[in-house]
Image (tube, rainbow, N blue to C red; front, side):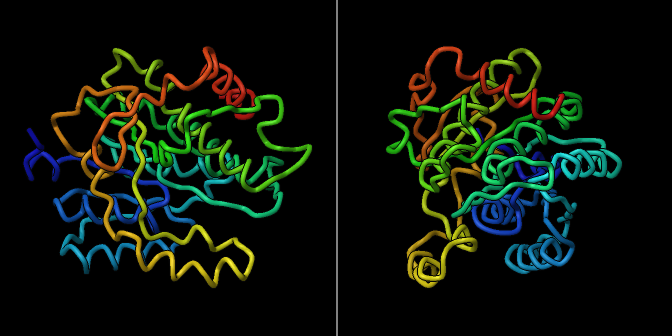
Length: 284
């Protein structure tokens, strides 16, 4: 049984990466159902522009934005505090931010930017908001992952997870994808019995601007690829709102709402290793 419109309207949904791509598609879908959607934006201009698009597409003008650079721990801590000052409830956190970098970059805090955005931000943002999620329960955390076809052997090099020795875009992208998925599974274990669940999902081929940091020849090709991409993310909206999966925890869903046993692909103890590594980087 799905949530009624009244149920949705009484819930607050926070979406990282909500100004474009999968995050914006989910925000738009939830807004269409009448939800109160709050998006995390890197700037006021991008946040306001995204909300304008969402409002015009759905007729829902209840949206809001909060600003943060999700590559920086300091900004994540600040935006979490800002959110909790503005709102006393959070029912669904959607970890949808992501980026691809084609050369090695470090944040101002000395962390590899790909790892910081694609993995570290989810870990820290979620942990910063766990108290309000638990107070608002039942609540959910859903994390965007990748195509399960490419996750048959999800090996993570914990000795060089930030690829300090030899950077390779493809390997860095794959490793961060594996790690964010593993984060969702490990989080699910730690949330058992709290009233908060954690699941991961493949959104399908949704229109995005992931090529914005790419070399010029890939940026030229991006519009052609986006021409065949979807504007909507039905699976993301479903996982965020459907009553029938309220108790699902530690599950991976593909874009057809099918459960895929990705969690069995990771080596034993990998989730704990990732958690310990992130703890060391954040002191959280």
